[in-house]
Length: 74
Image 1 (cartoon, helix red, strand yellow):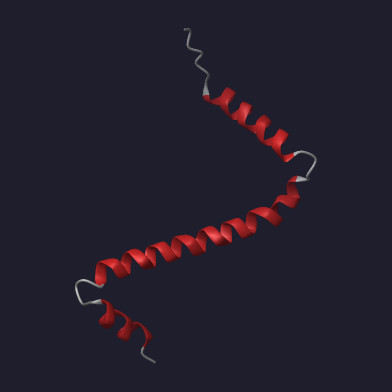
Image 2 (tube, rainbow, N blue to C red):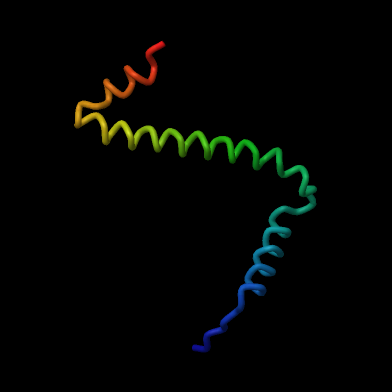
């Protein structure tokens, strides 16, 4: 079985053509309608995951209450 090595330029070209086929006749500027909400949801998901990790670290040590009391005290 022969291996076919491709360089980075060929890979990028192939992926770009595949994206153009999948995109179809939609104008590239219209993708902001799809991409901006995806980026927004990704940011919310990452922030939630980070906060959840922080809570799992602080809760067993008894630091969770102290952290939030100082963070949200007016």
